[in-house]
Length: 251
Ligand code: PEP
Image (cartoon, rainbow, N blue to C red):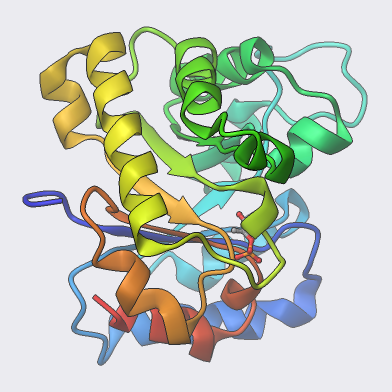
């Protein structure tokens, strides 16, 4: 979208031990030298790697994100991670409501909204994920699902500086399948319109809308040139520096 600096975000999911820091170093160096694409770069690493990842990229343009946070600031929640902990370890962003969290942990739209608010309180940008399942698409419900997810998982108070919305059709994640250009354009235009109703036209016009779902170097240029697509959320292809950099170069 005109005037919005694109964001290319990686999501490493449950991949990566210290051995993966070499790929992160290569990503950092790629953005530091040579890459002339005018994009912001972010890698959402496993929380266990955050501190060391921060040492690796802190002198590069690459920012770091978590992959989930708890809706509370702290407390008796064994195994959960608070937004402030991510921030303290070096993150500036956190993904909330990824479809794998919604599926694996039964997260609801309202819980996702609570996580986004917790992210803001800690000073993190929330990357709120939405998207239809295959069954919902086949039933012709895609736009209704997006409307409902925006109404319930994007809290009041969302603005371009604290929120990114990622459209990730569940059936396109990790499958190698992608929607058609027209389908992505329709979904993103719809998301922009719904956000305008929800948070106001001005904020909606400047909010970054990412596409996610099987983005690869081979399809990045096409997907990233679609109207209202202001960047990508990249899973599998973010694990290899060469692929991630090639996707950013598509801009
Ligand atoms: C994701 O995890 O958000 C994602 C889009 O994964 P992939 O790129 O592997 O489909």
